Each structure stands twice: as C-alpha cells, then as structure tokens.
Image 1 (cartoon, one colour):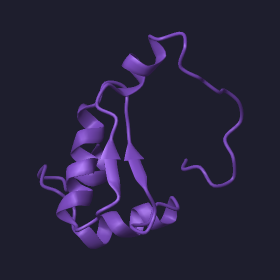
Image 2 (cartoon, one colour):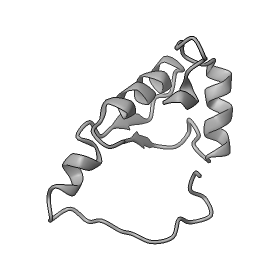
Image 3 (spheres, rainbow, N blue to C red):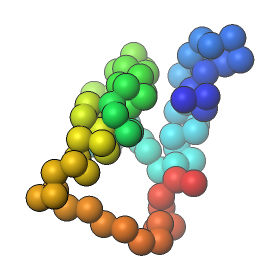
Amino acid sequence: MEDFHNPDGTMRSAEDITAMWRQWNIRPDQQVSFYCGTGWRASETFMYARAMGWKNVSVYDGGWYEWSSDPKNPVQTGVRGPDSSQ
C-alpha cells in the first residue's frame, strides 16, 4: 500500500495515483476489480478510485485467501503477460 501513501501516511494525489495506474494499463473507462490477499488493501484502492470519480470499479472483498480456498474456483499460473503490472 506504500505506493498509494505519502510519507506521512496520507493518500497520494489523485494525479499521482492515476499516472501510476496508467503505467499499469488501468484506466477509468475499464471495468476494474481490485483484489488482494484478504480484501482490506483492495478495499482501500477501491475507495481511492471511487473518491477519484471512477464508476466502473468493484472489490473482491474475500481476496485471494477466500477464492483459493474453494477448489472449484479456477486458478491459472504461469509467466506474467506483457500487459501485467510489475
């Protein structure tokens, strides 16, 4: 989450976050779903996006922990594609 915070713990500017997301090919005209391990970090980025006026955003609040605990859920592994973030 340090990517989204100033040294004093406040939220970075919307311009900074938008520029970072643009580098990662995340744009407000897309349907964006945030997720993380358990959901709390994704919830923070979801709230940032909503505060910045993004409409097509959602959060998977169970996170990877919940998803991966159900063997019926699909999981893919492998090398990241060229469009994925570092």
